[in-house]
Amino acid sequence: MTRRHAQYFTPPPDQYRTGLACLGIGAHSGPKVPVVDRVLDTFQILLVEGGTGWVEVGGARTTMRAPATLTIFPGVRHSYSADAGGWAERWVLFGGSSAAEYVGSGILEQGAFHAHAGSRILSAAFDRMAEEAHAAPGILVHAALGAMLHELVVRTAVSRHGAGRQETDVLAALQRSSALTVSIAEHARLAGVTPHALGEIVSSAAQATPKQYVLSVRISEAKRLLARTTLPIGEVAARVGYADAAYFSRVFRRRVGETPSAFRDVHWVDQDDIEEKESPRIPPR
Image 1 (cartoon, rainbow, N blue to C red):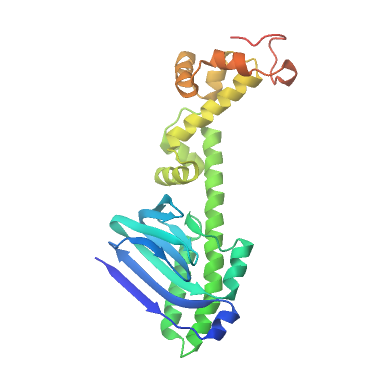
Image 2 (cartoon, rainbow, N blue to C red):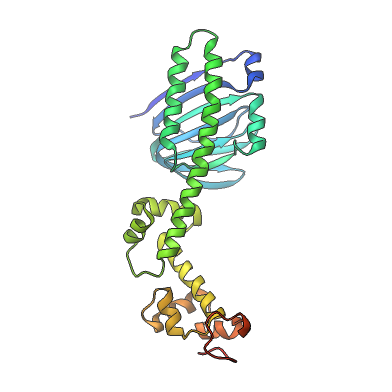
């Protein structure tokens, strides 16, 4: 079932000079007609509360997965669409003298961002603006919505940076557990997220699945050990999570294009930089 609501406003010129002016606010849930090659003369913040879709800004298309935010600047051509099942969105259009200040300070940033952190607070901020749009008397509605826009802009930035911190924390946790022979569900538990959230975060931050990311971490660490230590190949394999040295060698060759021994022959560093010395002259096979 499709539900939609929208209100539009014409603030007086003085409202723009006081900081921010709200030009429209609305909500939509259910199937949605795609927005194609649209150019606004205002700023827009859109919060996707449920569902998935895509957004294209500047020719680059990215996936939108709730919770997520999309901020568009005036004069920028953009397109976006929910997937077949539709999505639930909240949006606001605005302008004003403070917008340029927020852009200059980096608080207002264009693009689509996951909003794992703070999405409930953002939804609450939209709720308060929708209530004020109906309750504020006369011309005071413009001042009330303008004041609340400052909170919404800042909350959007907090959500954006909070999501970035969570992505960093989850990737760091996945790196720490990469050598463990455990399931993806267990990797997710160790990272403090659900398996679904793990997939979403790794896809957004590293453009990979958790399994692919774990493999890349293992191979990178194997390269470091091969180039900077004299550990036997079997010990290198064990340290990065492979009990079978022969299987490790096959995986390494498929990924790198050469065997671990061949990689070491080329990349082994001078013995003065070796972390664990076992041979004074040549790296062991």
